[in-house]
Length: 193
Image (tube, rainbow, N blue to C red; front, side, top):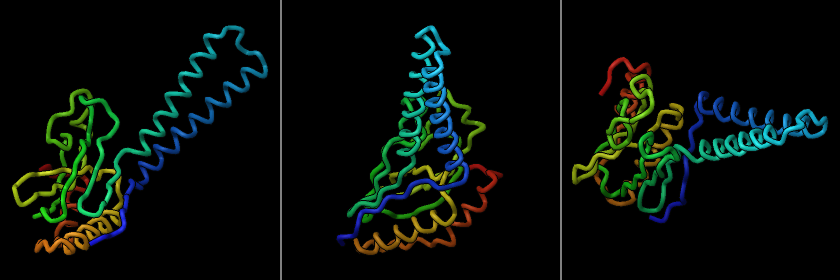
């Protein structure tokens, strides 16, 4: 019953490229500030101020991206924190799902957020996302965004859920092959749920 806490973070190639590109922009901004100070390229302090603001923004973005999309396995529940977007643009809302309550899991594709609400500002019609849709015994539906996870990670997450729900005498058994069929059908988002 007392399993180790476990956290999964997105590892898809698009996610990694996004993190790397923000990191490169941070390095270039720091380099620009240092070269400007050394060579006195800017006689005006306003340019330093804007470069400093850009640097702060990029550091914030790398921190925000590194904390978004986590799936945490705690002793008695799955915990997914809200992403750091503002409320109108949020994709993932905070979600806590007890292992003993899990009835079924499937993978869906949707242009909406994890509460199945329209995302206000983003081009969400063009940005279809994959979700675990976890239904509990009281028919509550929870969504966890899995858009930036690899196939291998999804299988590990499903295996971990199976192991943990068994510890809570939950009779549900997640058929990983069946769930992964949805992963493949929504791979190119041909059919929306």
